Length: 437
Image (cartoon, rainbow, N blue to C red; front, top):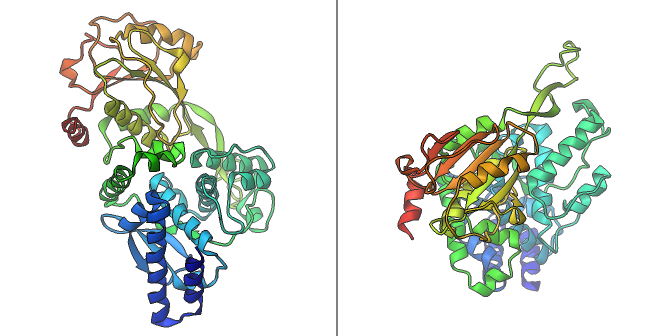
């Protein structure tokens, strides 16, 4: 660690081309240190292409055509007083942004100055809660709680923190002018420790190629770890390494998006819209309706559904729900619905713990709906299954039903199934997963 601190001092003293050379040495020595002492981060960083360039932030993720790269600025490092341990913390910080898909999830939000600040606080807090030896003034959940003056749970997904920050600002009804003047609802200024502006291009025409590269990167890093090394990682990181997340949107995604965007859940300020009551006052925001859904996911845990299949399906669903303020509860079932082992699906994929393994009875799902929905008809119900069960069903409660099958629709056992039936059988990545069994 002392050596890395000395490498940082050499960067601060160097000028011109020498600064580039010693920064390259700093990065190389840092990756070698992590490979020996924290191999998950070391293996991930060793696969990232290093770009040395003048920039406003010491370190940042930047998009290339078919990969994400790490950009390091010698001139910005000079402005820091980081130690070697703090520099390593920021390298880990960058890897976790990529692992949890922050650049892709918030690509559109960082394009506006009002949202970019909120995204920075939310994503940095989600990442930094898992790190130690952070630079001074680093954002954590504890700091969020101090700024907002309300409780904030630690180690939550960035979407949770972003929603809390938006609610906090909306409660203060802060306008752009008030925020700029330091009025209520304004986040304190912080030293910029890593860059997020490069995230804005994450949804361009090359997004699918970069996502495939990102998925391969972390699968490779995970595979290379020993069981003991994996055991030292926090559970949320292990969980993110486990599921196989889709590289391209599937037809069923658009179906779920329509379902997730139909129920109002309050209003939020929108500075891109006119205020209908006072349209001549440009400083006043308009409003947009915020929508959300309570989603019930029934997970077929019969013997014909393997762990990799189930993990894939939950990973698919998680990647979609990351951008929607939906409350998702997963209920395992085989011949009965196991209410005692239900769990809330977080915006990060979770480690799968199977509880079922018998046959399959779809009527058990329909029979459980009145109790689970408690009279709230019209909720979205997703049934993840291989499609092999009984032939006839008796509807019990009006609901928007989506059957997501791992087998072709033609092999679905139910005749005249209520709701919409979608199959993954034609998806290329699903086919590749099946061949690996």
